[in-house]
Length: 212
Ligand code: TMP
Ligand code: MG
Image (cartoon, rainbow, N blue to C red):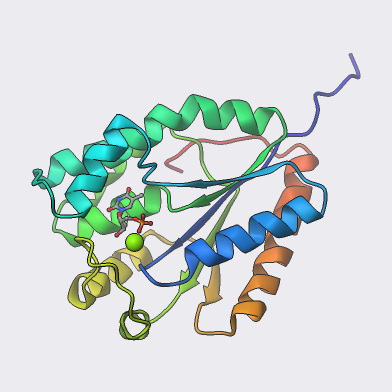
C-alpha cells in the first residue's frame, strides 16, 4: 500500500525563565506559521482552564497552599489530561507551539529541592517535543524587565536555581536562543528553526515519547 497518511504536525516547545519572552515569541511564531499556510495552534502549560489547572493557578497566586510533591504531580497531571488531544491534533496535521512543558515541570520543582529523577518520572510517556527552543536570559536581566506578576515563583533567587536545573536538563538537541537580542532577531531565529523542524516532520519523522 503506497498511500501514506497525511503528514503530521510538529510539537514545538518554548522554554525559559519567567520574563524570558516566551509568550510573546510563541504568539509571533504561531502567526508566522499560520501565514505560511500551516495548520497551527498556540498551547501553554499550565493550562489553567481545567479543574486541575485551576488548582495550580490558585497555588501560583498564593491563594492556596499545596505540598511540593503534590503540586508537582498536578502540573504533570495537567499535561497528561491533554495528552490524547495533543496526539490527535498532531496526527491530524496540526502543529502545536507550546509555551512551557515537562522541562518547566522538572526545573521548577527540582529548584525547590525535590530529587530530579523523581521529578522526571511522572513525565515518562508524554509526547516528546520535536523541537525545544530555549530562550536563554540571565536571571538578573529577566528580573530587570519588571512585570514579574507576583506569582509564587517569580523571585530572582528562585529563578537562579531554576536556570541551573534547566542547564542540567538541556541536551544537544535543544536550540539555545539568546533572549537578550532584539525581539525581531529572536523572532527570525525561531522562524528558521521551526521551519526546519516542520520539514523533518513532513518527511515522516516519527513521534517519540519522553523521557529520552
Ligand atoms: P506561566 O507563567 O508560564 O503561566 O507559568 C506559571 C509558573 O508555573 C511559572 O513560574 C513556571 C511554573 N511551572 C511549574 O512549576 N511546573 C510546570 O510544569 C509548568 C508548566 C510551569
Ligand atoms: Mg509567569
